[in-house]
Image 1: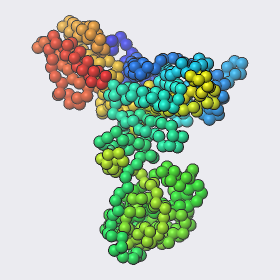
Image 2: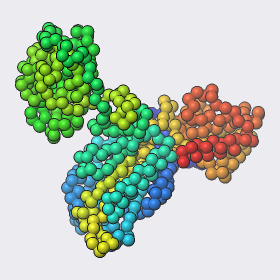
Image 3: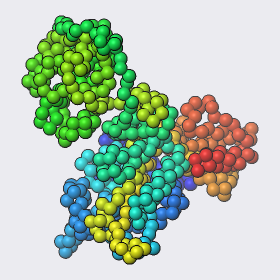
Image 4: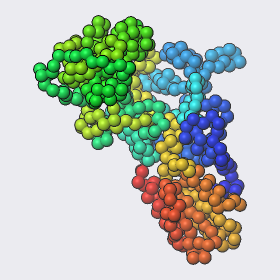
Length: 575
Ligand SMILES: [Zn+2]
């Protein structure tokens, strides 16, 4: 393909509404254009990348034995009404009426539609198992669509659904999809983690998310630096710390100390020359309307979701200053568990400090030599937030904190939809049984954006070979007959060997061509100019190499074979 004869518009400026790197770069480099809030057109480059994502997904679904179908995007309301989701989805569902006043909506997901197909077609255990998938446009009326195609209102997803005779068979289907998903993300070259989202709260059914690790991600996950342990920060575990401080029996009685105006742990710790991990930080939370004093180690933070779960409370929030005053009779910063009259809970890593400093429930005073069990009673709970460097619960190595973009989700659904929609079969004894279902999603268009979030540098996108819109970016400098001929021969040589080439044949300054090449992000850049050709050479520079001096000269004669080799090596490494 030649830039001169195609649609490859690059922009100097970022779009004014852009909040993410992928939004900025995909727009500037000419991959997508905004049509409305959360609605985008794909230009030729963007569509090529999306097609690469789709074809890797399709290959791995087919390899796993799934069959492709295509369900409609426009859906009559009856199916969601049957399952109850017509109401559950609320304003997220894009609803419309046809000319006869019938209720319709655009599909945000297709569990009901596929269950309906299966309940009509499956009669006997001989018709199972089934694993059906589609790559389809989905619609969700997000309240604040942002981040470009990272979270649009119209987006492309691969959704797959497995149907089995019992839980055991369904678990094997789930496991097969887990393997297929790791192959998908490995082949695309992502740095990602599979995060078990199984909390037991969903009725014991299995579920896992595939998180692409990026600085800009919305979700925080704790992942081991050594093994495969990874969990959302709300459910991440770490072993309790061993007891710290002197022998409990040798600690002197607690003692009040004057700490005028010293509120934060940092201030008091500096004032008393004592490390923050010897403090009991006492925070008042309002849990389902009641004040609870929550005590954690000075260098730890309370995770409100863990706290809610530990207390069985539906709503948890920090107390306001006046509520702190009512609960502790002191200003914010001087709360403590000793003499506190309400409910007190203490994190296990705070409970194991034998000689601690804490607020005195009196403005401008703290207490030292405080010991849980001797000076105050509190329920021991596990409510603190995991921090970087905590021990892995699986292998003991250190946990790191990462931000992630959820790009895939696998879920052993059970009979949530098949039961309520009457999808059943006759087993080998002629007894009617309910089909067991799994569902498996990959955000196809989201992966295009997630790739840019992970693969970019200050100059533009740095696509992995498997997702790049083209493999080689051929920059033509000048238009002498020699240059024309060399460009044509490399282009044809590569294309005949299945390598995709984008030729920049525009009449532009070399500097601006190189800038655009960096912005667009094709993995291999080859420059053909009169100066090099005089020595029979062209210049090769990998996009991932930031130093322009690291470009190498290769012989014109061997250019095609060198490039074919490098492209194939990169694709094989990931396949
Ligand atoms: Zn580990």
